[in-house]
Image: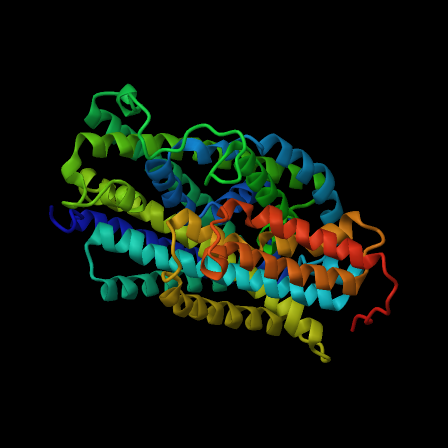
Length: 496
């Protein structure tokens, strides 16, 4: 099988897409007059646009590739994570959103200082920056290893150069355009992602003789069966439900990228509409990716020469979709779907860069600086920091691939490791009136330690704890310690 079947038309489409994203950044760079314009779109953005932007941000190319790969390797049990969505909306819409929107702040972590002092604001901001830098680094790594190499058939060194170019394009349009530019490109990229998934399903169904051909006639031996609850298995219904519910709730209540979208809308009603749009689109795409996973599995079963000789389907699960893009699509469509994959990656990178820049500017530089700064200088500073963050994540991506596990497991062990620890101070601030700053700080720090220990339990202790338990365990550790220490009277350090 040849390395790549991409034609000149495919490359034209990809290049045109990159130029279009740069044009958006330059266009919106002229509309940003102050930090609120740059970081929050003037707080008057349309709810449905912001909701789709939140979806595109969180539902990155990592998820786009890892979910079909997870189904191919381990079966559809992981897709049970759409079941807690109604409960997620109720908790976020009626408990978190009113609390967030009543305070007109720019950074999510300003909320913490108001309630629990500067030390908790700084620690939460540090956790967020670590989490999002790792997340963006995984995206860059994934673009090189799981998209560029399988589709273009390039060497690792050449693929790295291509990924750096993608990073540069993303840095330029996100650092210039601010949140307005990020949201518009997110909406465009979401439609491309939808179209790419549908196109792949239609083409595979046509090749196999109909949509019914993609449903397996028997349950493969390597697929996990239905298990309601079992701590010893990789995936059970309770662990998937609990882990997914906690991820959505924790992210909505503490992640700067999510809270930034809330603050970009006009009021509580619009913010609820925004979040509902996010969940609806998220659920529809997950269902599409479930069907895509079945489609790819059926296609490979009927075309065993599609994977390299001597290799198994499980070993190549994460790369089957990119491989099909390169070798299974007609002329022109490969470039379109590759643009969709790059779109998903770039939408996450742009939002991550924008939100990380906001946190660094507001939670560290402006907060700890004694002198005031003009709005023009603030925007310039945010632009420079956005560029430096982009450079940092490209460098960090060079070492991220050394962590063991498939894409989904890699994501939980790095990106999602600090989701629960980051939420601890927000939980204490919102729901525990007696919460004390120092007690919460200690609980939050030890929650992060416990998350690290669970993530790498096999390497540290020789124990095989499922990655789905990282969030529940670290959340319980953080809350118990924070609440317990709050019961004891000891002198609190005053916030600066």
